[in-house]
Image 1: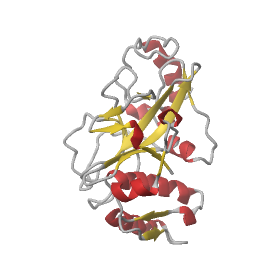
Image 2 (image 1 turned 90 degrees about the vertical axis):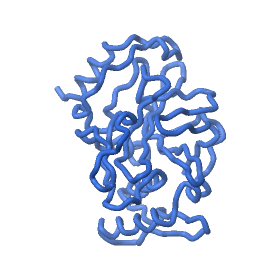
Image 3 (image 1 turned 45 degrees about the horizontal axis):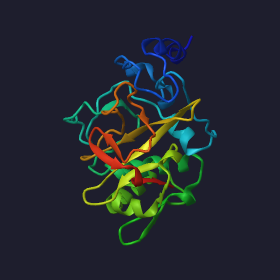
Image 4 (image 1 turned 60 degrees about the vertical axis):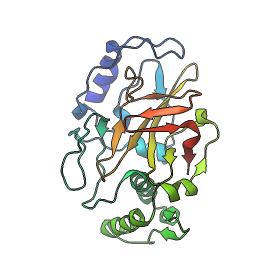
Length: 256
């Protein structure tokens, strides 16, 4: 029997059932050994929730299939450990690079670009800088060429320019995988919605990931406000979304 199937059977026994839309009655999930989670989609759900169906070629499905590192340490671009090791639930197997470039918005742009590249949609890979200049992905090239393109994007584009490129999501309850919580500015910050689940009463929960400054491993964030369902966050008519290292407002949700 696969480890992920065993987890799916056993983990719900550690927490109380959720009644209706109430997640407050659940007991905290026990500390996890992330060597047991191969992909983002293997991270357990609170009882009563199911992942939202996703087309196999969608951004959400691709994000769900990103591999998780067996080492749950967040490393900086230079190989040293990040000082704060309390923010992450899991670390993604995504390259950081050897330069201090792939920070918050850069990580979001990398994930979007890597998804489009996977499905040979290079013409859709582009980002603008603060002056409006467009950086288009080359029509061909190997992985090294793609990394050079991304480094150029990281050098000229950031939260401010990405916030202008994305489209606002007016209703926070319509949140979906691949959406971005972003505060454009200097400094600003951005996190990406990695997965979404729903229960029978229609209540949604979501999971987010970030990089930060300095450039560091992209990681799934814990929920510091409701650790009984961490790393999941509730979708409510809330005005603030508190993450371990930043606070967003619901009107900062944007989509591609």
